[in-house]
Structures are given as structure tokens and as C-alpha cells.
Length: 115
Image (cartoon, rainbow, N blue to C red; front, side):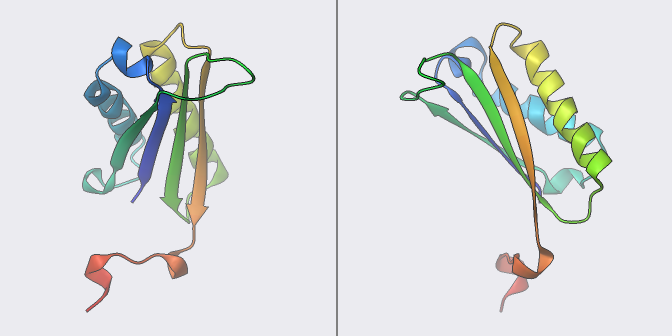
């Protein structure tokens, strides 16, 4: 944990390598010191077909899924840091956004937690 899923218009990955975008989100998240380095997971999904307010403007939206327990201030700083880093990387992209979602520990399970 956490998981960051970057959704974007296809032209985004034509302007910058997907690996560079992933690395930017990873490094920015790591710099917050909210998570262990080895726990941060980032992936990207570019879209060829999309509609943004009746147009095909470029966009980047990051879905951040984190384990409950961070303060509102920590989540706000995380969100703002990631958007700022992406804005520096893509100054001409009109839509760059993020939302952070907490999930309950009680509903989380992974392979190492089962026999």
C-alpha cells in the first residue's frame, strides 16, 4: 500500500515516457515519508477514447488508494504534491487532478495474509 492509478489521455504518454510519469508520482509520494518505499505502487492507464466535458482535451487524473490512518492534512499535502509535480511535467495539460481514497484495514487482504 498505497496504490496510485494514473489515468490519462493517450497523447500524455506521447509527450513523456510512461516510466517517467510513474517515477514522478512514485518519487513525489516517497518524499512525503507517509509510506515505506517498498509499499508504494504506481501504474498508468492511457485512454484513446474519452470525453472530457464534451471535448477531447488532454487530461491526467490520479486515483490514490491508501490505508486508513492518515490525517486530512497529510492527504491534502500528498494530493497537492503530486498535482504540483505533474503540473511541472505537463504545464500545457489543461486538466490535472487527483483524489485520495482511504480504505478500511478490516476489508483489506493480500496473499501474505492467507494460508
